[in-house]
Length: 224
Image (cartoon, rainbow, N blue to C red):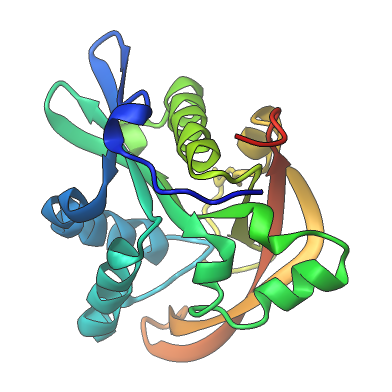
C-alpha cells in the first residue's frame, strides 16, 4: 500500500439521495462542523449500550474531536437533509488512531492482519428520524471511497458489546450488527478497551472500562 496526499477534487464529494445529499469534508473545513460533531456524539453515546456521560467532562469530549479533526488523513463524510446536517461518518488511518487506543495495531499484527492497510471509522452516527439503511449505506460507501483514495484497502471500527440483561437496555433496542453485516463487515475476535464516565442505573456516574469489538471490511480493490 502506498499512502498519498489526496485533494478534495480527486474524491466524489457529493452524492444526492432525493432530498438528502452526502458530502466529503477534508482538512480545515472539518473545523466548521466541530460543534455538530460534538453534539451528536454526546447524544448518541449517552444512550445504551455506551451510556457515556460526556457532559461530565466536556473538555475531554472536545479535545478528542479536535485531535481527530487535525490528523493529516482524517476524512469526514456528512449527510444533509436539505441544508441541515443529519448524520456523519468519519475516521483516520488505524496506525494514527492507535495513539488514542494503544495496542490496537499490535493486536492486528498478532492476528495476521496488516494495520497499515486499515482505515478506522471513529463514528457512524445518524439522527434517529433519518437513520435508514440507505443513508448508512451511502455514508459508508462514500467513506470507503475516501479511504481508498488515501491508499487504504480495508475499513475497521470498534463496537460496544451488548449485555442482554443490562437494566438500562431499551426493550426495542436494535444493535448495529445487521447493518454492518449488510455492508460486508465481518465481526472479529479482536477488541479494544476504552474507559469513560458511565451512566449508572441510579443516575450516578462512574468511571468504567468497556470492551469494544472490532469489525473489519476488505475493499474490492487491492491498491490505488
